[in-house]
Length: 394
Image (cartoon, rainbow, N blue to C red):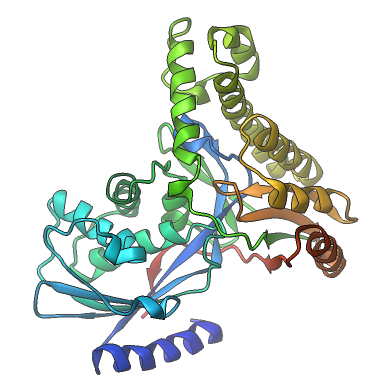
């Protein structure tokens, strides 16, 4: 463990003693994720290219002797200790943020992995809340890893990832694809993951960025995807797919090349649904081209495809908004920026940019000043370290 981890865990230990008393604890960490390219393709049977980052969620865990669990988030002290039963838990507004880990407990119980006892857990997150870096998936996979480890269940990580996604879909009510949980669970240091969301086949790709770094810029406008237009976009794509299936036997939009889509796009009578489907198809193929470029050491081309991705998300998928568009457009004007785009579900959250290391200070100052002048408040910047997936620390 690094020094920063130790400092955080020492502070958490004090809080644990204060809330739950003295106990022997185990420490866990689950990263957030940033998606480099391939947005809103995961639930359309396409490819994504995310990586886990060193910001994430820590947990200190101690077993209890009864069937109750107690959760406390140091990030949300006003919500106090959340207590819930390990058997038959149901979603409740009173649980607030804790519905995400509670949902994992319930989904795993329904799959036959009934917990013999509960836990006391203190959590602390270093991910900015509502930034689109997947704090919800980070917490879900963290809970799945805790249950798997503490109860000696022996479940492999891909299954834990599936349980985590199911919890968000069926318990929380957010109809997300599998990318976030997969990146959080399967992350690998210094690598991004090319994931086929149709088959879950994947491979790691070394991120050799040649004197550049990944810079995440947070709009600092929070968003809630559950109440956003996310589920509406998914429904529009499903409707478009049904229209295309009448003229071509496909199971997902991600199966089509751009040319194949263009040839049959007129089968989608609703123009908005046609736009949504065009983004899903073109973004999938853009992602495959971008990974090829990166693996051929053509970082410049990778950056150009990131820019094209943002334009498609702005114009065809309409999930950006003034804050994300301002950040991307300002980034495109800066020296040393190879590419910039929104990342995550959209409507707010973050952009991801590839910036030459020497240009990062000027990038942060110029973009920060111009964004603040236009939007009225400042953005935040994070240089991303690419990290391993969710794991036990001690």
